[in-house]
Image (cartoon, rainbow, N blue to C red; front, side):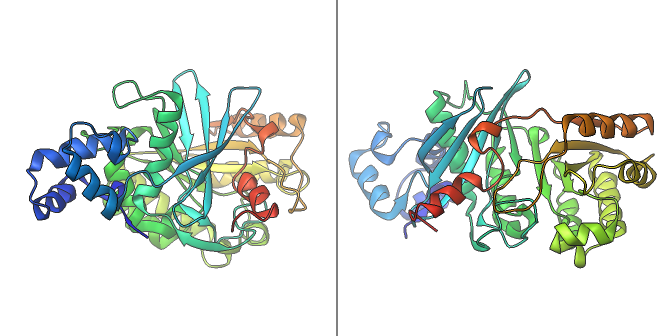
Length: 349
């Protein structure tokens, strides 16, 4: 495979262009063009010979949209083809404050959480920084955006894969995403979701990036958590909370707990009361999510009545909590579902 030029920072591009005998300003031109999803052929401010040389050596757009589904609520789901034939997916959600894109960080996932389609076939490989960023540049181009009038204003690393299991590429992606010569997305508008890899959480805290750290909790009880999240056999809730508090002390950013409501499993008053006891007084927020059902998984979503009752118990107990608005349910909006359909049709793995 060709190297993905979108992996590079602007400084790294300057080094590459110096080796090609080109002035440094060419690197800045290409950095901006790549972040606008331009092919080398479309970079009309470059000499024709240079465009040909870049096209021969490198890959410009590492994520190509091959399928788009649009929900009745305006949510869009994209299936991206990578240059090696693998596919990943992403979601564009529209809010009053802007448009949020959910990106994938791996092809598949090794975590195998019981409610998620991403881990059905295990981990295939990590995405490069450019392949993660390329999902955003492709959507911006499809939506008619550019660096000045971009369509994607917020980014959540909550698609297929565990971001902290692809640590180095994710850090590189975050740095390139926020680069002033590129998309210039504020890291305060970025949320990174982890299933609770404590050692990586501690390392991430040391980066001191103003990213919103989101932890998949889903139960206040370790034994129950182990049944739906294999990673919980290695890292307990107390260890996760300690890592979260360390993150807060270094970044000043409160941490967020995601809690998928599963009927009859974790949506009872006992669970709500235990969650209040566990988190009250901590600088955190609880984001309740109705389960997006996956046919290969034998779990069902909590009812609306149960979800709102659970929310009320948390608020009554003094926790900051919200119930996420359901988006994209009619287009298989949950992680891994569109890729799973693609695989079932025998088109890719």
